[in-house]
Image 1: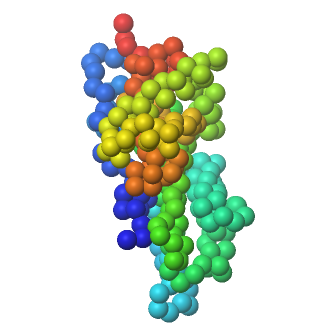
Image 2: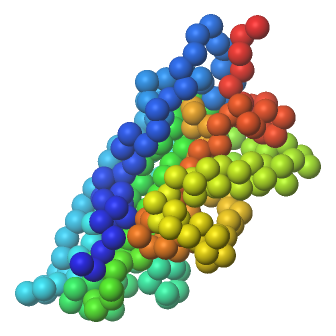
Image 3: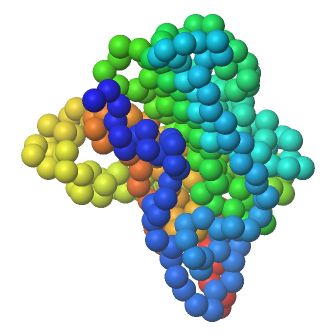
Length: 265
């Protein structure tokens, strides 16, 4: 079987039921509500799907294929363009060639260079939305004809609806607290490893082969800060796209107050 089913399924369908939300009562909010129905809020930026798929024009028989399940943000051209450009950059990087400026530019390039069984899938979905924030999970998957399996990449975007910009890790974490944040990231990673079946036969060897790596690929959610990696980053391909949560209770004093739930005292 040439693909990792868990990776391809995510790129096609998105994150579904990943985590349960933190429930509480008598609470006020900052930019992060603490009581929601699921990890994804439905408030905030309005979205419309941008979905299409097709085989190489004029091709007969087994032909290259593209599938796009993305989003547009009516009235927010800057965010719409950011998603389009980010997906194009991700798939271009997987293709190992010059970064294309948009999905349409990549498509034009792809039809000229793809082999008969090549496949591309691009996806974007919101995993958290409120009045102040739009948090997106982007995925790209690329299969080259003759390869053992496809390659995948993931990227979070934390978008400030107020400032109309991408929030960097320095915007989210308090000054001089980045080392502490990464220590909590490593702690959460170890919890993930402790539950990973692939690591249980020989934990010491797994730790040597697949050590923890810091990442800035984080997402603000109502349950905590979600961390996610590309395949092969911290685990074998069979582990898919590793992801784990750092609960907000552990992040007090580490994140800026705007990105911590606030209890109404």
